[in-house]
Amino acid sequence: MNRSEVVKALGGVMDPASGQDIIAAHLVENLKIEEKRVSFDLSLPPASASSKFELHAACVEAIKSVDGDAEVHVHFKQGKVKQTPAENRKLPQVKNIIAVASGKGGVGKSTVSANLALALKSLGASVGILDADIYGPSIPLMFGLQGKKPQVKNLNGKPLILPLIAYDIPMISMGFIIEPEQAVVLRGPRLGAILNQFINEVYWDNLDFLIVDLPPGTGDVQLSLAQTVPITGAVLVTTPQDVALADAVKAMNMFKMETIDVPILGVVENMSWFSPAELPDNKYFIFGKDGGKTLAKEAGTMLLGQVPIVQAVREGGDEGTPVFLNDEKPAIQKAFDKIAKNLLTQVAIRAEYLEPTKVVEIKE
Ligand SMILES: Nc1ncnc2c1ncn2[C@@H]1O[C@H](COP(=O)(O)OP(=O)(O)OP(=O)(O)O)[C@@H](O)[C@H]1O
Ligand SMILES: [Mg+2]
Image (cartoon, rainbow, N blue to C red; front, top):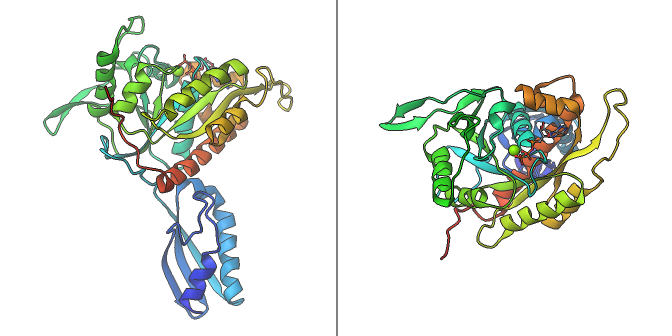
């Protein structure tokens, strides 16, 4: 067999994560052809890991179309998450910064941030969480870290805050710094200073993703964050009902403003339906239907997934063990697994096709 025939045949195999063929996506390495024996490494980003079986079959079929007697050996390699190009990178060791946002409060941003982080982790990505909800931080409670204080260490002559770690995820939150009952009254510049500290004075290790759990709305925190770091993209969380949707559209419009210009990577519809434990196949659409789909359409993005209302989600959040880690509820685990995989795809597409992210400059 000749090499160019083999390469051409493999060029017909699609990588579901990037939507490109495996040759164009540079996934094939160490291609060797010895008479009838074809072997190569296929380096798969975490999103495609689940498609191994299909990809393997498609590669074998492609090569057999060149020579029916070919003997095909595919070695799968864990590929790396791509770094989104960014101007003026403040955190060079962090490949992607994902803001989790909503217009309305209480729709499940923190729940989505926590479980999405764990789902990405389970796919092989390294993940950290920055709780940017300065006024009402919920990440410490969700990860069972209330009352814990981060240490400060001198590294390279600079004092840095060490994030706290739960389930192998480093995280920082205002909740680690102030007492729970202490009121936080901060305005623009002070608020910006705190976010800046969370980014520049925290020891963030190499990360594929830093998930930023935002407070609700379109206020100072969102703007300060966009001014401090280049955000890869935003994930919008909404419930299916119209009021949440109306607010989510405002959040969407903020990210799309010419001066901010953060791409919307996708929408998560939370509390999509209720299924009682005793009738797990029944779905009750308490908050209406299709809000997520409508918002995704308006934002020109994809619906990453839907999360039903399940008591274990709330319990997990309150008990410090996010529901993703709870094997008893595979429906929720499955939902977050799908959301994480879709997000990886969206990030890969973003890294490939959109303009580099940039820090927002305020024009007076
Ligand atoms: N799918 C779900 N099923 C059951 N309970 C849920 C679900 N999603 C979120 N909750 C619960 O709803 C409450 C609000 O969720 P969460 O704190 O994640 O929302 P939020 O958008 O971060 O709120 P805030 O705007 O105050 O930051 C929490 O008690 C959480 O456990
Ligand atoms: Mg929250």
